[in-house]
Length: 224
Image (cartoon, rainbow, N blue to C red):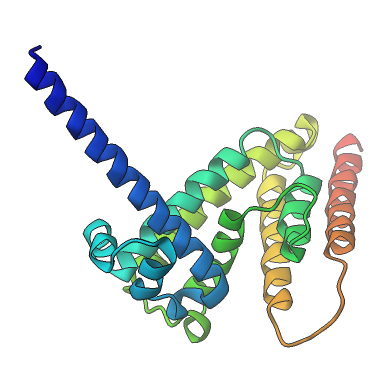
């Protein structure tokens, strides 16, 4: 390889690195804005101002707000997959999902997790999110939620005694549905107009004990 070719490759690599950094800046700015203002309240101009990049750079990376939010969901989904790798018991899942809503989760509930929880409201409630059936963001979130549900079932299966799963193979799926219903419900309540001083960690523990009690009950039935 000639020196000029090496220099060309080096410049190309540098340009790509700058482009990657700009894209990351835009996504992180969009993440903060979306958590504060929601989908409807986040504009490309605001993302430009928050990221410190020209509006032309934002549109160079993402042709529309929908495209930006699809990429943002993909970013959050990737972070979620890495965070939730390995077996996940009901107590940890509910602690992250419910106690994390308080903003003081001892396990460091992330912005990416919070964004995915907010996206559930945007995607599933047209009144709150204003997203129609053909919206790319809604479609992307629903695809990711299916994937995340499958992962949750697999990880909860690993945390339930094998003999119980063998006797009741649909139990991990039922536990996953219940745990998601609880965390989604607490998110809605936390963002409602009902102003109560809630100890989310306490409610997470209560929910975990209730579901663990179900597992114990199924274990007794399997043994009997």
